[in-house]
Length: 403
Image (cartoon, rainbow, N blue to C red):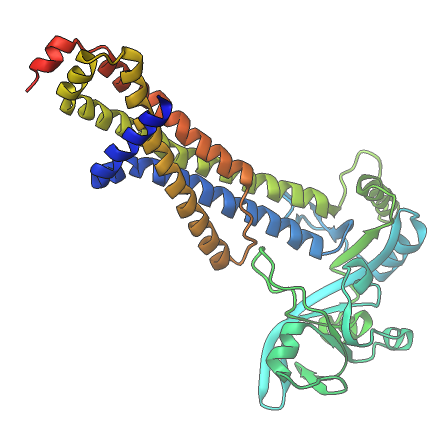
């Protein structure tokens, strides 16, 4: 009996193909929107996590200034950090594997007739360790170069590509503003960041060279600290805060005049934001599923009215109310499932296009796809039941009199 009901439902849907398609359009849009939005949202979340991880595993960042709202920066006047702070964090704290200074400034880089505006970062050899960044070729800074403040540099992949193309820049001399700098190494590419910046668009020079030739003062803008394996970032953060309060002579009860940012906390916050936005957008898209269900119920009621005489004949020749109920209920479910299948294909297609346009991973979730398909079936059952019940309760005699 169920097989016959499915066969009749498919025949009816095919016989009224255009009306059937318009009927399930709401379900198609609803399922497709939910899958596309969730796919893009999960891809964004994964990209954010990858971007934070690319900054370095178990990474802490220390900046001067009193805490501001949110993790984006510091505010309030405060003494700057120093190279002595970097050494103290790296050597006096057992929870810290390495610490590296970081000062950055946008500068114009020139070689021959080519020039490029890029970020020049002053740091030392520990920068590659704390940022989990490898060299593609060449070498890092030598101690003699760091101590003397020699003008040597390591290029990011974007700078190498824009200035030298396919050529080998090792040993070449470039000009940073008015200062000549010899290229000694090339960084492995890390790719674009979802924060809107190109991580490979930078040049590294020794920190003392930066302080003398670029900034002109001994202030350190930021310190990167890598947490030792087996130590939690919370403990390392507490150790840094204790040490910095001692070094900066902050009395008990006074607020810190520095900030220690935990990349894991920033990642969790950004992930939470993207998850909430994805959920809200998916909920809005899910409303169209309900609209699609109402459309199915409306068309099924019209179908019952159009086929009243047919229903009367079936009842007169022995069909039971249960058979009539099953026929129209199966027809409603078939419509919803067809809409669900089309919606899944549409959603995956839109999700793929969106992921490529935003340069994020394409990460369809099988559970979301199965859930959307199952929900479309539930829509067919819920909104198809009442028209089916109405058809099953028709009086055969009155139905046969229907023109």
